[in-house]
Length: 387
Ligand SMILES: Cc1ncc(COP(=O)(O)O)c(C=O)c1O
Image (cartoon, rainbow, N blue to C red; front, side, top):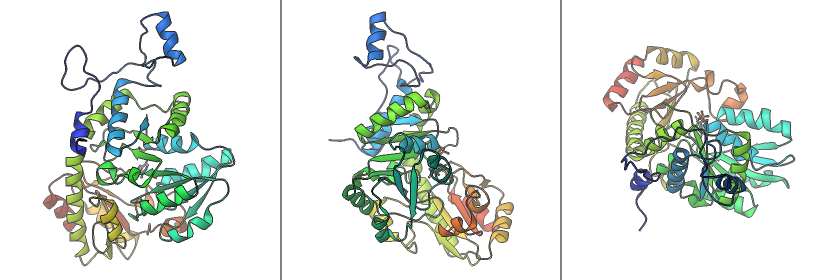
């Protein structure tokens, strides 16, 4: 019988050394030695498997990749220095000049920059489709469309995409379905169940969960990962073994941390929903979320992030943020510390106003990543800041 999620996250470990350590050590080495000239030759020729150089593979990095594969139920993966390196590798490692990507609008700001500023240099084009109108997506598929890329829940709008629908559409048109699963983590949502070919994570967020490292990972179908491995080996976005070791340890506590993130986020969302100064609140597991039913179907809990709106725009949002005493004002998310972000002036400031409004980023929108502090203290700070 397959072990449960928590057990898999804890018990998958790199092979024990002759020292019989209980906690796996970090393999902080750039290269590995060969037993003989013949051994080195065989490793380089690919006749035998083994570590050669940490840009290619490393026991700490491999342990992290194996854990994510187990948690996402994926065949293989690569780990990268950041979430953006994972997003870029997952696209640039597979597509060619002349190819086209269908993208569900409302992707992370740097993903938007890759699509609009970088990929066109190599003649890889994209079309944004409306998250709220999936019935129109099929009409946007072109002869050269090779990939469907999406985020669900989206950042920061917290809109959801039906993964079963996306899986069926991708299979029908032979598209590579590439899902950024950063907000949900494999604990809350497993896109692989719906036929997703590639799953991307910014490990910087809930996977680290303690705001210490930058990292990314792409897992998925073996033959696609083989191509990405070639791309990553030679273009070099490898994750540092130290970060892989930190992230691997973090995965051991992912389930308990996510339970508390979700519990705190839901309680804060409920508090804000009943506050007279707040115009609207969005959180996937609030019954008022327009896609509440879908959220309950494809996620086990609502996640650690919520957004809310001040109807009079930026001024009250700024005042609220400046009055906070405990909560951190930062652009990150998925930390033990509760973080407040104003997307329009920070993470999504490079978008035009129209682009922002089309994905629900109004001037009065505030994003909160609920941390692991006591919920009474989180709500207490928010309540006093609302005045
Ligand atoms: C949904 C999503 N994808 C990708 C990224 C990029 O990850 P990183 O900052 O680790 O490069 C982020 C970062 O905030 C994100 O929120």
